[in-house]
Length: 345
Image (tube, rainbow, N blue to C red; front, side, top):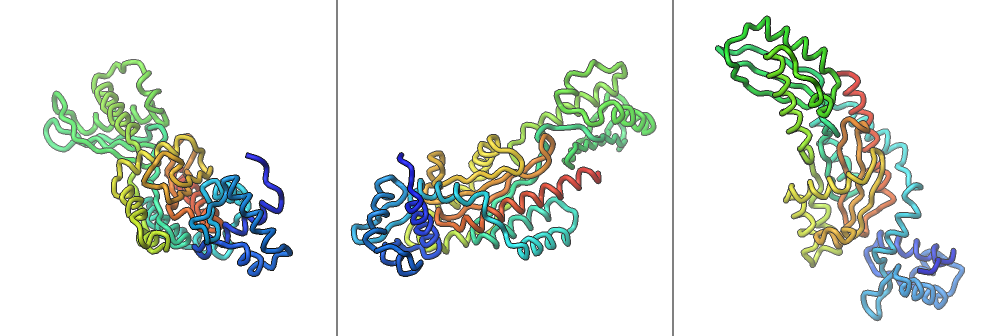
């Protein structure tokens, strides 16, 4: 594809901005009059025709103006992805909402979904943070009755597992507490791989508990995604391009089929870093349900320890200039909160 001239770049950006705002095909005369261009309508029309030939614009009907293609949106996003900023007043408002909330992960997730949906006027999705690899933090052993013992396992990042164990013979609480203390000292901060590689412990009870800890942590590692929080579904249904089609409902069904949504988020997050941004336009050929939509996604959390994914789903005509900095800002905010939470544990 040949390089765009500066004039073609400027006109393409104007067409996309206008279409994002109005949802109406953009004509050459409209561009000249609205933006007071120092060009004739004929010149603009010729340039728009060239942009159409290059695949950046298309013409829905012979007599209509032009609308952006997926390639056009890719160009637009590439031009402004590192330039768009969220107004400081909006940043302060969002920050205030989070720091006024309780230090509770579920409340943070619900609030993040609400803020993203409100600011973007689109559909939000937020996954709860999970350890990138299970890491031991603390275990408690509590005698209940007879041979039964409650094991409470805490992993770095706050994930907690509880299970009732039935031992071969009754064990006094004092010995259980001593066993837990020795294991906490020996295992603190170790990953699943590190625990698996440890030599067999001489104390049979300690070895039995270690085996159960490894099994619990392996189950935690195999989880694909944390709980998913969404908001703003009605925003997508209200968009004019979806008024007479089933495209929006097809996209929203993706949110109802949680396993499919988890697969999408997992595949996207695998190729991204914490704080990084990904924009999927038209499903990028991989998700038929999203062919008329775009998603702006980011990972948040503590690299190598605990991470989650958040983002926004909207029409391809979404306000990227607003959505991209909002997603980036909320991701950074959640990263800070998760980091503080881990440091305070």
